Amino acid sequence: MGDQEFCDRLLGAFPKQAELWMTQITGAAAAGNADQLRSAAHGLKGTAANLSAGEVRRLATEIESLARDGNVVIATGLLDALRVEVDHCVKAVHDVAPAAASMTRQGVN
Image (cartoon, rainbow, N blue to C red; front, side):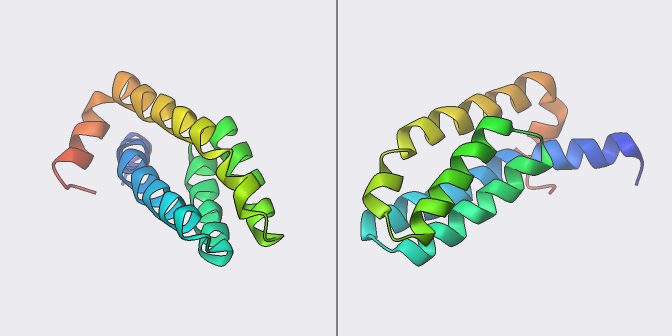
């Protein structure tokens, strides 16, 4: 696999992976489950780090830390900002790499 193909796959996978993590994060927060919230935030943090999505990574790290300390209510207060940043990154992926985003929609990744 060449560098461009690798980049396309990485970019193409982000929207789907980010949405899966966001679904888990919001579900765990709604259920008040700190351990699941911590785990899902950790997963999103890694996904964001792969793309250097700094603000998503920062917010996911903060949510992970709050959940680790049992502060689910405070962590939940950051979910709107996290959603905005994830949506911004997904849009950026679609804008800069439409071919990669198309691969994800078609289930290539």
